[in-house]
Image (cartoon, rainbow, N blue to C red; front, side, top):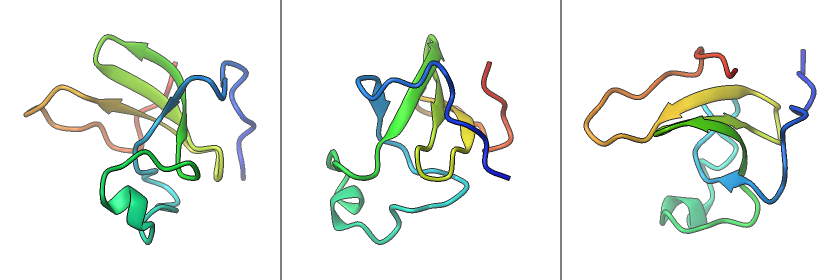
Length: 81
């Protein structure tokens, strides 16, 4: 079941992270080079300091991502607020 796009989703607030649900960017050369891709961006719904709350516009999956280096990353099961 696809979730609706979050009401806080704004195309002007984007982030570039791999989606843990659909992995749609796995064959993209631009994403592989860690460059800003015009196709594989994610909605940046909110953040709690270094923790980003994201939604994939393709599959509508939501997840949280901790950007602090050296700390374990949150997996795709972490709910967004």
